[in-house]
Image (cartoon, rainbow, N blue to C red):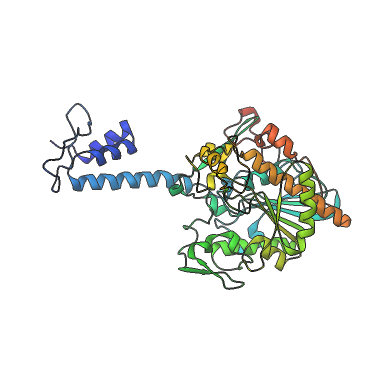
Length: 443
């Protein structure tokens, strides 16, 4: 006698949804269409009352129900992630916390609103903007931004940090790429749990995609999904699709806060030509050259590339064209993004070790040095932190009346030696109870 569909869920409780679905797929079809000479396989056992023989229609229903259950379980996690869930524990020297909706009120109450942290120095000077999280699957950007947010003590000038500039991109990820939903960074007081998001804004927050996305400056045509790419959306629109409104808010922040230096931190695949690179707007090339000399003196190899004038919508181009800021974009290699990678998981994001890339480097397929040691998140975030400090120092040298002086930021050597987690707070729930402290103080 066949078991009822409830027997499926009894099996699920004992064996898990993936095992049930696997058994269903491999068991013999007992309905019409089964070849008479087919070898019969052992049916899935559901208990002491015998085996579970199921016809093709019921089998299809159960598979669909299993798929819906898996979707529901995943959705329950991602729908619970909002801007308030993106953790940041500002250093005690933070002056105020703002939101992007202050610069574009149309973002208020949306998934695109996110925090900006401001640090005022004791003496007047220039203003530095540090941006991470343009793309949610580029881990070094938000991690490096958090190093600034959670350690900075500004002595002169002002620092503004936006760790998760496209908050919507952290509410989903790319399961078809086997991307993890989170990764963990060990800190002295427990793990820092970081969301691993997606390159684009969540389609739930901006739908539908156009068939073709027409970039607003030169009317260049791109794939429709690129309308959700923040780094193709500048200078943005005050009212419009969510991603465009985020871009507009960032532009307004740069203008209203009189930002002098604006830096957008990214990652890319190791086989991408623009890697370990400072991409600089035309007006910022001299500062980029000076910064590269500083980095080379620290043993950090760095390339320089001028922002292409005919590639529009990008931060390093539109920030520089439409504001007075010196605009830069930083790139470093993340093996978890590459097409040559092997197994993809949270460990790959943090360790940067991949045997397939170790093989690829021997055949000359990569644009960066890569060994069996990999390129860890500490190395990648450390490069970004050091590059920001070098750019800030170069700007201050050229503009002494607008000097930006920041203390408390670890060096590249310290981050690589100690691990980037040494300079981050642990996530709530990961710390010892006695160290679960209020935001604004360092755990």
